[in-house]
Length: 196
Length: 201
Image (cartoon, rainbow over all chains, first blue to last red; front, side, top):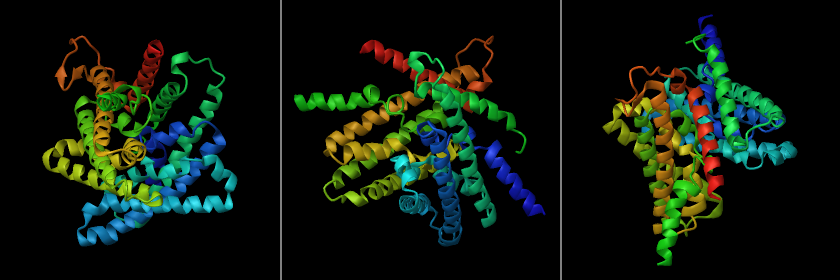
């Protein structure tokens, strides 16, 4: 019962209260780059969710089973980035084979998941928070992916409507997107304090 | 003479024409995350200059040996090594700053500026050009970070570099120190840059 409660709180916490995009500024590049259309944003969200769950689990495992065992913490960043690059390659191959249309529409953004800070960031946060059981690491990674998907889909929805709005010339494009993101962050701050 | 002017051009391109943050929109995550005060922003900027210099030099020296299909992997590993060095150095000499910046120092690994410069400049150019380019780009990034952090620290606490500058009657804008302030300040700054560059053209 106790573990279930911890897991549930952790999950809701990372999806809403400690959302990586809104409170930790992770994954801002795709958040600004791919949030033009809802369907693409959703696809991107799913791809990131998959990669982050895989990467979070694997890096926790490697960190605890190999690196800490042998005192090789110095190699941590090198290992993490290799695991993430491998996971992205896997997703890319899978998508190209089974969903070529989706693969085409991602274009450059799919390989860029490798350099998505949300993924490496989450692996580092799991390490920083001292999560010491595998199940919790898996749940947190999955929650982080869901949180990213929610954030990017909300943003895409707003931006679809923003195209009809009369934005001052100098703020068109990235500036207005950032300001929108700021206001969205303000809204999400309402959840702060719900869970520590 | 002509090579000197082109070096100059490379250097200043990083600071204004191709400013990584304001023009190319690269490296947004650290830009937003560490700019609540000037001090962490400066530390971050200097770390990025170091990593950029390290990776540009290594990649530039190795550019004839690189095979196209493994180059990205090589870049990433070079960068990760440089970041590990920077992280350990910060932990040893500035433990307080290291605590404050937390995971954002290792996150330099996935900062698009660095891999972008390795791909676009260092893998095609000689050592001197790569070094000049790294310093120019790094300075452009650092200056932008400090400007942004200066605005936010001033409005959030009334201080710059932890020294009081605003009169006592000034009411701090708490929001500026929070994520909201980061997004909105950067958005307005980008708008301002758009206006200025349009007038120049």
